[in-house]
Length: 240
Image (cartoon, rainbow, N blue to C red; front, side):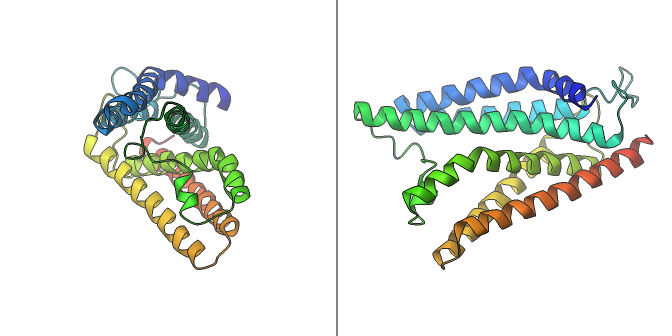
């Protein structure tokens, strides 16, 4: 039943996220030809569609046409939360993978045709190269990066779900733009902070793999807490 719920939520967010993925890919392609402005504009549009898509996933199938709470499938509150967080995380991961793939493709093409895109795009390798890591270490971390991205997106969607439930902002046909912008901002600050702290610790001599492992464990613990909270909040607010 959980897999059916995830599939249902993926269908709910399909339209908005299909547009977001297409615009993201187009933005990177245009950036290689026309500079960083098209990329910046495309990222803003992508964020808008992400907000719309996630908001639809979180609220749709929980309410009928009159706005009364109901479940489209016979699920427990935990399954409701898990299915929606999973669907949102999958789409956000796809966006990450599109961005990384586009950056690699444009970087390779830039070398082949002699186009300088260093001021437009930030190579995913750069953060590791700045830490003076070996080629082997970089290869391992890049190979594990999709799993890291998935973990980060599960954290983001879990945090978003918990925050919206806390302030009773999951409602049919309602979209709190301010709340979503705050959620995106907090998530960006957390990611940037973790990256900055990790960089300083690696520079001080700490093992990068140990730090990555500790970070992943912390992510898992926080995700578990957020999912548990969301399940209880959903149960208490809607008397499941």
